[in-house]
Structures are given as C-alpha cells and as structure tokens.
Amino acid sequence: MITKQIFKIEGMHCTSCSLLIEGDLEDLNGVLNAQANYVRSECLVEFDDEQLNTEVIIGTVAQIGYKLQPLT
Image 1 (tube, one colour):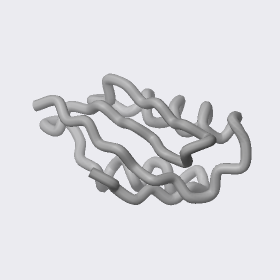
Image 2: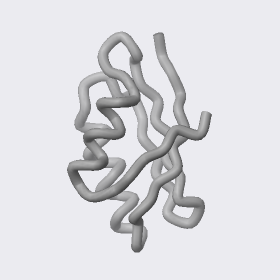
Image 3: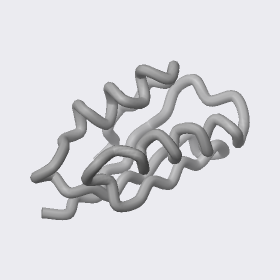
Image 4: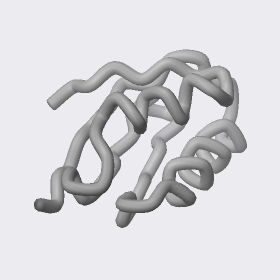
C-alpha cells in the first residue's frame, strides 16, 4: 500500500541539504517521491510500505547526518 509520511528534519543548514536528503531517499527501492523543505524543516515521503518502512527511511537519512522524526 502507498503511504505518505511527513517527517521533521533536524540538522539541515541550507537548501543543498534538502536536495541531498531527497536524492538519498529517492534512491531507495519503494520510495515514489521525496520532497524536503528547508524552510519548514520537513520532508514528505511517499512510499510503498510493502517494500520498506519508516525505520529504513529514518536510518537512511541518519547515515548522511540528519535526524528525522515522524509527524503524521
């Protein structure tokens, strides 16, 4: 099933950070769309929950130095 999840992002310093997060998330199998917003410090991820879960998403972003917390 397709799931949309909004995360609060900690550790972003500029718009390039949001592009890096989007790119790493979109490389994951099962992620259909990732939109990181630097100004709001949020990220919307649309993914297939049969292929991955929020823990994988959080772990992927943690590997590049950012912390995600689910909002919805």
